[in-house]
Image (cartoon, rainbow, N blue to C red; front, side, top):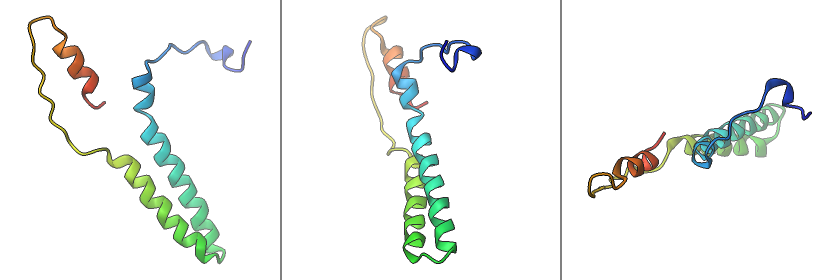
Length: 91
């Protein structure tokens, strides 16, 4: 029995769903690093102050998302237009 066995098995998620969480994860990691660096700056480290600001900017960049895009989808009935549109749409 593995460490997660007591809570049951998690269903397999498609890779696209798992990858959609990556910007959130990276943003949280950068925010934690910003906090750690700011704490170091409070103790008297000037370099930590600059690094904290850099991590804060990085955390915001991860959450900002990409530029908007327009995708035109066309085709015959039953050719998979809706399926493709759902895969391309942001979550």
